[in-house]
Image: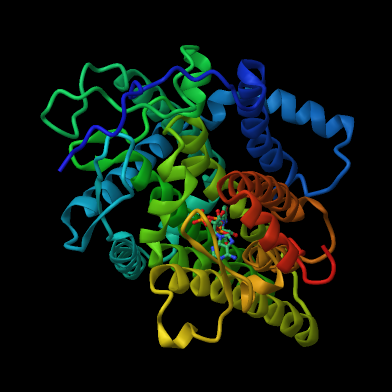
Length: 442
Ligand code: NDP
């Protein structure tokens, strides 16, 4: 039952602007699109993948930018739209548990269908049928049109962000029939159109029961990343007659990471993205363009530079992948299990401190080693996939550098949040668990 929770206006005006306001968000948009663009034109079969970029390479990149029509492909735009629509259709038709999200400011909870993983397997089955009927040709087309598809995804994600921005001005929420106003994100209601378009004005834009933020978060982009990886592996096979051990070392852990994410789809409902961020350009572009285009870099590189590792090095990289994945998964699962049912007998060996905020903080097990040991596992897992590309170029290590910055920033935001929430209990907790990422180091 809906309850009005307080006397505050539902949608207060955003006063504090993140990213240094409008100049900052314009810079983020320009830089992120440029990174996709520069990494493509400076790291491909013809250009090689070398740094520093020479003036000749820069002038090639700039002249290619002027020739944008060569990369604006109607075919790619249509296929991209079909991909998105296919997954949206599966969102509606695959029977699944429907669960409630966290309580919103207006006292309501939205419902979400948890069918990401079955959607993935239906899509995988369909891809196998396509392969049986047409061989590798459609996949090679995807690998060959990577950049046209990336451009299509930029157009699509930007149009989607524009749509949700304009849609947020409708008079009442479509999520109930009580004429309640549309619920905006606390950070995305500054009144500046460009800033709000970037951050996301509406918290949970929905078309009927299609929750755009939840849908975009794990489906078209994450599954698109898998499809690109598979296509690049086929491309390598078509070019060189086999698939290198480095390709397997890069794509198998990535595909597994996507499956793991979909397996724990319901967890996304308690992330900052879903609970507090609006749905605007930042998430739309991040989900639809950034993840598939940049995270598939290792496979794209290896499709034209097949690195063959010695058995010893391959085993070392595989062990690093496995070890770091276990740290990531076991630490996250331990916290989830503890938070879901702290009295579970299998957790009785774990020590914790009680807090005035009411929730308990683990101080032993994985969470006794470091306050964000899960980030450490996640980062080393990504690093192992970069190592799979060998040592000929630093460009394929983009993900490790970017992800390090992302996790350090995320750690900072989370520490601020916890210090604010737990106050002196957080100080106590930090005394018990003094390290942030690596026990006895940092
Ligand atoms: P966490 O899963 O680490 O959650 C942090 C929260 O957990 C804190 O705010 C606090 O919430 C609670 N908490 C902190 N310490 C303890 C403790 N000792 N005992 C019990 N609860 C505690 O953060 P994220 O949601 O950022 O990350 C989840 C996973 O997703 C990570 O493994 C991360 O690496 C991964 N990730 C991957 C990304 C990618 O692009 N691949 C991007 C971002 C994240 P409370 O207020 O409830 O106490």
